Image (cartoon, rainbow, N blue to C red; front, side, top):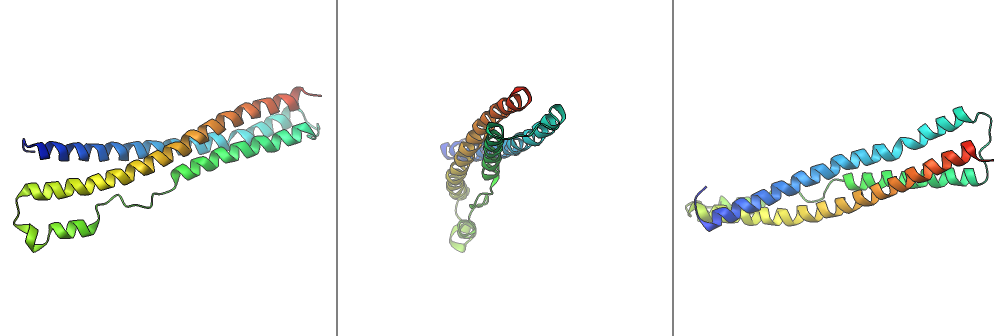
Length: 165
């Protein structure tokens, strides 16, 4: 690129957009991990309890505890699914903006005008992407908090069923 301030600004906007897209990808990858972490422990614990306490009925507090644990872990997995939901805005520059750059009136203009228009379009995409990433991050953090609470409750439930009266 050239050595103009506009070139530096355009490059900065491009790097910001790239960073946000990478961050969104990271959040979505961790959301898949959250779903796995939240979905697997309950059935494994049920098998463990069945093997260690065969014939022991699960009733009263233990039954309520099982429902609570499953509800917490399902909610955590649900938060992961919400964090994975596709965004409504496109990752592409609006074609109307691109068409105007290719119009007769702009075709012969200096290259800087095109770079500026592209940087403005990327800045708009950056705003949209930042909102999406922030929303996904909140769902992911909440989901992991629920998963930790669910796993702690699951541990308590297993102890209650296997060691309790």
